[in-house]
Length: 146
Image 1 (tube, rainbow, N blue to C red):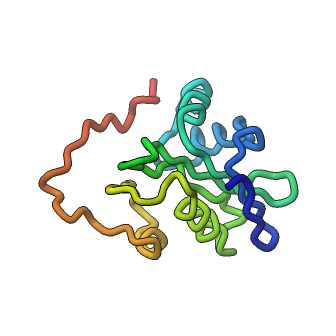
Image 2 (image 1 turned 135 degrees about the horizontal axis):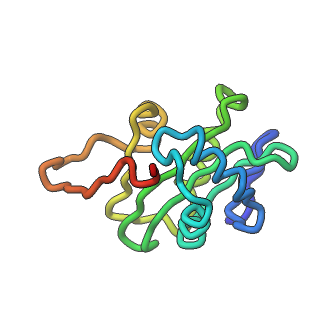
């Protein structure tokens, strides 16, 4: 699946179309989870992930990244729509493209972490962990801060 056109939003998994400086700018200055992330870290993350970009004309306005073995597990991260483009259904279109991707079918576990968009992700089958006591994490929230 390289392209999925939905109304005025063009959705693509082609990494050549990604505006990496724009992605870095959003993540490092506007996200709630990656403030201060270095450009090289963003690039390395993109290089090793399945990425979905959302575009209006030639401007990237949305992004999502999935870390996966494409067989059993996936982790959805870095999902955003630029503030001035929110409220138009673009996050739903971006998520529909992620969930329809052929490499992400039949996974045993698909995870994400969110503090604000539970309703969006619930539309695609995401719930609180079935057995939260079995999950652990190593979390360093201020890793990108000096």
